[in-house]
Image (cartoon, rainbow, N blue to C red; front, side, top):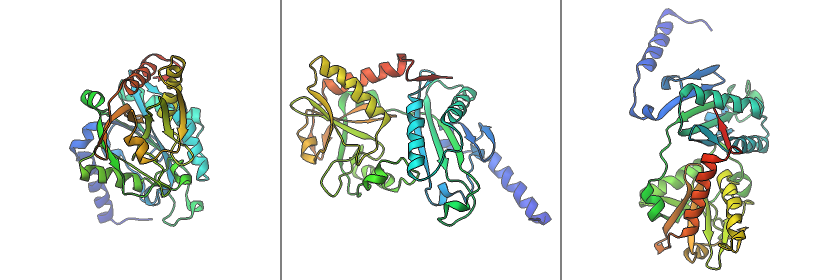
Length: 323
């Protein structure tokens, strides 16, 4: 495609405006990687995705969020394995192997020189057209952003957070189990929580089963000492909650818990629970002090599990990918 002199001038001016742009939220960004642009970048203005990328205009892609703690990615391999499962669920192959993508993740963190943060890793179907036809794309693309992480405050871990039932319909089971770029329902859940003055909302499906938060798994400790998590048949199998369940088995062995299980849970189960917590990559194990105006105790089991998880993040080489 040929351009007139005026069109070339417009392009140059657009690039200059991008390079000179400054926004307050850019202070939260450390660096980026783009297979489309072909490399690593520190400049936020270079954080560009083609408009015809199917990940942008159709939500056609998958993603992961991985925490950096004490100079290492935490449980990166588990996140990359889930990324590949999610891609397979939407009939999409990763453009590179898990080991090759891991190398890019490590190199980005090394270049940014950070010891704490959050990796946002996206794999899109790629650019190539504006229809819903996946065959028109030129190839899958990898985009990464490394950002600051603001975990919950110490007071929130000590006092707990406030949650309620979401009015947004729960995702159908097949889609709940895929970490896709289509997160509109999750966005609406967070929006309603903010509007209602809550920290989190929890989705409930048509059968009355408690599902999950907008980006968090949920667990409870029943009054008879069972640690229960909503079944992964209709919720996302969280990497963090899966590890927390393994750590909780140690409490069964020491008679601090009766059992660890996945279950169909109802709202009344949450209201009557001994303890309730949200669990996720950015949260760890975050206790709930109130659910639908019902007070819930902030107890020792959730605090102990959070401490055990933090120890794994800090000390266990099995889960630490050092860069």
